Image (tube, rainbow, N blue to C red; front, side):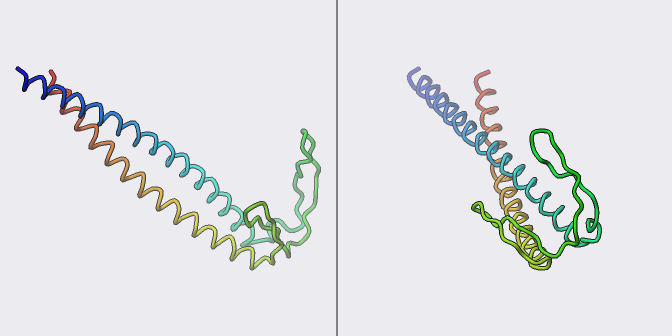
Length: 145
């Protein structure tokens, strides 16, 4: 009878540990999902900017709405694009030629794609751990029935 009680306690401890690990991995999974969404949005914006800079004639001499904030918009005409002001990080904007801006954005795109690849691999590892934990918890639950 004492051996049976010890085995029940060990099973309870194992289940508690598995639930703890499941909670930790679930939190990590949610954080990675959030990071993937953020990087995906950034990559989408970079791709749109690259597309725009690839054919600047699409926007040269066109009118656009300039947000004046507070619900006010100003119609502005775009002059031929020769220089681009690019955000380079840490709150800094740098004026670049059209070609330099495209090169900079292409480098950023590669970095974003690499970050997404790395995060996707990490998410896959966590998914595998969560599935493994789920199977183990199911096994313990079936033993109790």
